[in-house]
Image 1: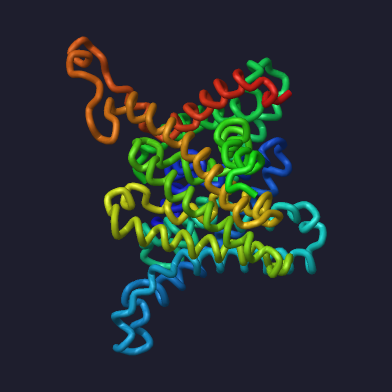
Image 2: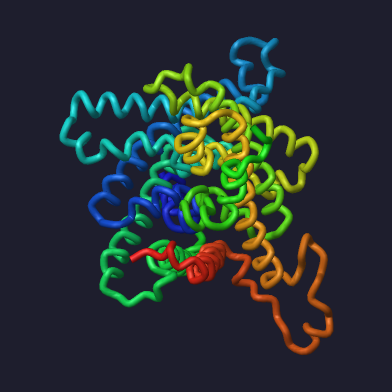
Length: 205
Length: 209
């Protein structure tokens, strides 16, 4: 339990997807113009992360890793399929996103109307694939921790995009030098927020 | 038709400045910034992305009339993922140390928005040769930004270039100190912001209102 909590907190504050690894920057820059849509996209990203990480974790540990196939019998113990992991992970993510899109469209039309346009975008959001690749690199001990990591990363991403959107809404009233308007100032603010978030990195959880 | 007609030259050279994928089209910022704390990984990343985007463009452009519209994203992702797997295996075999430094970011080329962006915007509507040039052009335009950012961050942050000391010892004796902040992730964003600033003050038509 304690480990679950610390994994979540670490993923939100210390290893924040945006401020520490710049993952998901494209949609972060494009969708952070107002708080409401930013919140919608953040929730969708968190949901997809929480669902795809356990699937990819299972695949990694029971199919792809070196010796992972040994449950099939001793002959399979030496097989190492890890070179396939990129293709498998992205296929799982893309098909999952497609599935979620169809289910949401059928059973929750109002949610689909508010999230609809963002769902297909999520398949190519680096934060999702990044979550799976970090999971592979960090070699979590069990599927619960992996899911907790996915949840934490999603919430961290959500926090970052909602904060950015709130700042950008206020920014419309300020006098920014012309060449910096739009993209430039957004980068600088993200950098400053990143520096602020670095103060968490000294915390031992 | 010549190999390099005027239009093709435009396709190849446009992305280097006026139509740069990073600072103008806002593509490919995702997985790139984290690798720019040193010059060497930035260069390797730039070359890998150029290769992947050029060949992905060619393959999709050849397949463009046979892919059903509804599942095109998955088809594109599979093509890209296969190419990235090849690049990643090549890096592991010939440049193991750099591959270690790049860690997950080689795999993240798959979701680099430059790939999807160029395939959707260009390769789906143009022939293989133009698509190849477009891919090379955009890869190089992206690479230039990476190399500039990597150059300044390594020079100011650790006083080295490609791992060799370039700032003479005399300067350190005089009281100069490396700026450790430049190595940390947030400074990549601010360096890019400065590049955007310079670029947009020179190209006034790109400024936003």
